[in-house]
Image (cartoon, rainbow, N blue to C red; front, side):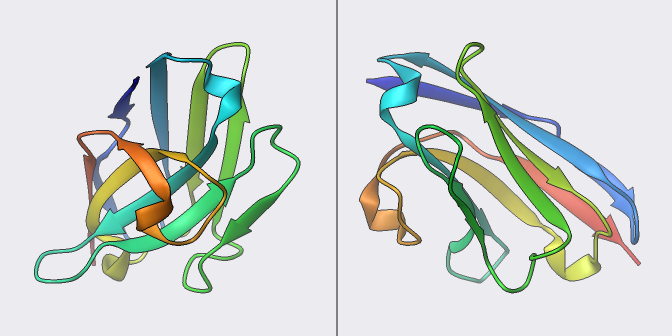
Length: 121
């Protein structure tokens, strides 16, 4: 089992920044690729970003490319998502997840409880 706890969400004006953190505990953190997904009210959960086990491979959804940055620190069992140039359409609950390196939520086995990001216009 892997336990994931997100933090860092909040209310920010459009154009602002947030840094989301995800603390992992349980099984060996470096054994898992990590992902961030988000879900807005009335919408399906969507892929935001992923990072492989070593941190050497990353990818982003087209909607966030160039604005968001994913990183991980295996020594601290942490994964981060830096959100810059935020837009109102980025408003959602953001979830941290652990599993295999994929853009599909079905390939991730462990999920955090989510952290709310709200961007005002």
